[in-house]
Image (cartoon, rainbow, N blue to C red; front, side, top):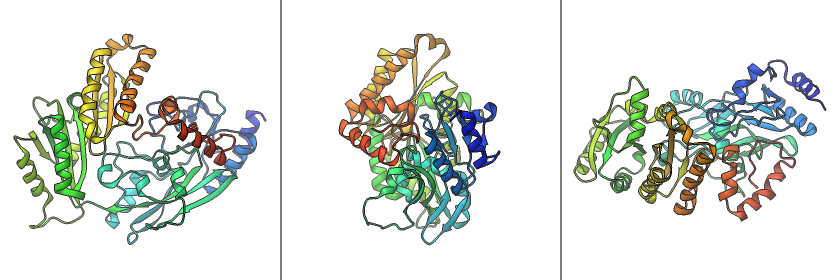
Length: 468
């Protein structure tokens, strides 16, 4: 069947507002924020689940590949079409809205196209929140497809740990709606099938709605930017904070001198927290849903803890309003982009080996890739590192694509083989990481995935990630 005939069928099904064909209107859906730039056959925007299911049946019959897309904020190209012009982008942006909030059960049920900001806006009057903390504003479906983590994972876990149930459309049988789980916190009745749809980029089915755990809104927050006396001292502070504050510890982030100085250069309203800037700083946050009183005041407890560690593990510290300090942390990614060509790494290593990894990786860059500047930051609380590198314009001629590929491979080899870490801590696989998945994932696991994926999608029409 010709492309024109296919487009006529899709337009007849979805209507003129549900099928975007013009190149200029398609463009925002065809380009990811970091990687992924292609050309779609069209952008399909179903208005409800019935339209989405019928669209999948149409695509299955005509062997049309589908690229599911939420808010298009992913960083590995998983929601972008290739350059063939034959893939259909299935945008869930019209299937949105909060279905139900149950404050007693502590859950929120929402359609896949609902944004994270809209979830929290709906939950706030109930004294609740969905505590996935990101610089972007993803959709519910996108968060599940990528198993989003964020800066407060140390306390709340990732999306996988906060999903009680979901609904998904299958490609086999085409358009069948599958209900998995519900709002129960305890349900041990066999395999937890919903997990197959979390973190797999839509390759097993398209998430249409989810039941998510909500958490009490913090009533107290205490935040400080801390200069550790050494990398090893940072780990001692982490351990001691976990012992001292237990579940009140909600974030333990790290930021290098280069990363903070990039923010000061490119964020006009930013005020330098230290002068001069230290080699490394930790953003530590405590939070509680309990009201402050004379017996329990987090800020006073935090100040006392900080004072006890001065001249031992802490060299300097700034205590400020949480929003002020978090603004510095969340501005790093955009600031580093302005330093030059970014070579980004989303990696993780065991927490105990964070200092050793950082020291070895910095030495590797200085020795073998001079001219590349490291602007690293990340989540010491969970072992995640955004080991981002920027190549200034004056140095870019010395970094052709083969040398950048060599840089990536050198860092990933170190992470996976040297530190038993992950080449993708939060962002997923997608086309950008497919080569590294094939390189590092164990053969037995890939063989199992090769048998499983065709069960859900026998003609490999869903998504652009291959797990087998």
